[in-house]
Length: 137
Image (spheres, helix red, strand yellow):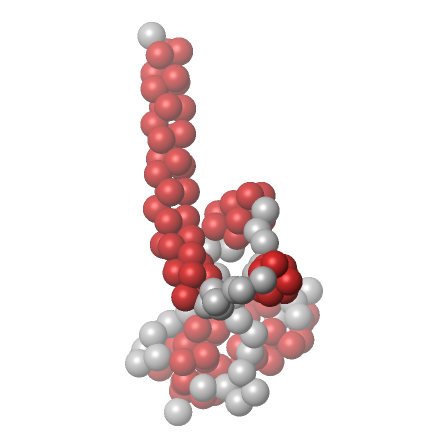
């Protein structure tokens, strides 16, 4: 009895992870495919085809799976030269129109784990402070 419940649970988990993979993969692959098809030049010779294919990025299955499952929740960009309200909200994980209390609570929560005295990065803590100052105004 217990083994059948465990097998059913493992089966449901496998179906769930498979569905999650398909749901996350299809839009990304569809967009990449549409961009690639849209940017295909009129190719008259094999030389032009080889030259164009060298500009198209190739993705291995493992890197695509890693990209979908591991880093799908996080912002995939660097910092802007001058911090904007949108970037500050992304850093503190609050709405750009969040109240001062929510901004301060988010800042405090993040500084507890990222403070340089506790082994955190001085750069990240400075970005957190800059984001708090920008959203507090």
